[in-house]
Amino acid sequence: MVAAFLITAIAGIVVWLVFFKFKWLRFTYGWAFFLLFFVAHLALVFLVGMRFVAPYSTDVKVIQHTIQLVPRLPEPTLVTAVYVKPNVPVKKGDPLFQFDKRPYQYKVNQLEAQLAKAKQNVLVLKADVDVAEQRVAITQDKLAFAKYQQKLASGLAQKGAGPEEESQKANAQLKIAQSAVKEAQADLVRARLEYESQIDGVNTTVAAFQAELAQAQYYLDNTTMVAPEDGFITNLQVVPGMVAGIIRAGGIATFIVDAGRYVLGTYYQEQLKYVKEGQPVELAIDLHPGQIFKGKVESVWWASGQGQMLPSGRLPSWHLPMELPQGRFAVKIKLDDEKAAMFPIGAQGAAAIYTGGGGFAVLRRISIRTYTWGRWLYPLPF
Image 1 (tube, rainbow, N blue to C red):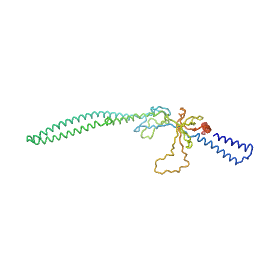
Image 2 (image 1 turned 30 degrees about the vertical axis):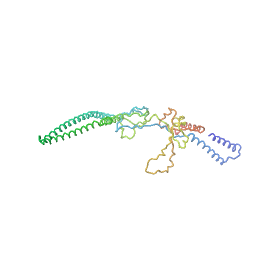
Image 3 (image 1 turned 180 degrees about the vertical axis):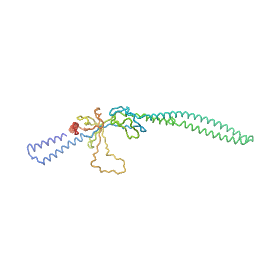
Image 4 (image 1 turned 45 degrees about the vertical axis):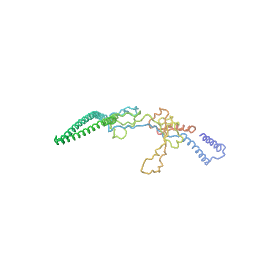
């Protein structure tokens, strides 16, 4: 920087002495062209120095996180009340919109009744197990008596002391008793399976109704939409009487979050050669002509959408149109002043990053101050 100024000063003195003071040579068009060519190349020193020592961008915007407010309801639902007002700050958890809760309350009431019935039915299943166990005991006693009768009738028939018909009848009664025991045992197994059908110690039917009730309660709670974070809503179009839900695609409003806002500036890739995190930044915001705000480089987004290729069945074409702008990288900037960090979303301006000191940084400071003071007049017309 200093060398360029010295060369320019020495060259100016030499030209003045040779062509104007002592007039050793006549100042011709040829000499004028040569001197103009020489001065233009000296000017490149300042331009290149400012470009890399103090990168500058006029594509700077204030970025804020936004949340799409989408009703989490299973069916189209009537909006009954709007509690929020446009551009009025709200706190996290404050109610924003109220949807008609009656159909969801009815569903909750219905499932609560079904859950109570299912819990009562568990007691019935336990009683069924007790009844089945008693039936097994009774049929086993009958089976023992049938065995005794069959043995007695068979012995009398073999000795000729009793009719053969009684022996056959006793055999048939024994088979009936054996079948009755098997049937009672099967009923006991079924009763136990129904009673012991559990998930994590809870009857499956009860667990199913508990899950349905929890989902119904979730939808009932969502009939009141609350603020997800501290922030505000702009361009509010929701009014009582409109229907929102699965018929309406997307969100019904955009919620702008207060916390986490930052400034994002885009720079040509070659300008970021010496840019590092923590370097000082000066910002000129168009909303505040004549003011300069301080900040620091928080990070450089080393990525660009022009390097992304999506899966496709077609081969890429590399004949890009001439009007396609040169790809840029974004730099995330954190402002030092917390009050200055409350710029509205989308506010724009210019930013200069200082990778070093010296004369080039001084020229850039003059340049960005010229920009911010020029905002009092530009853009024209008034």
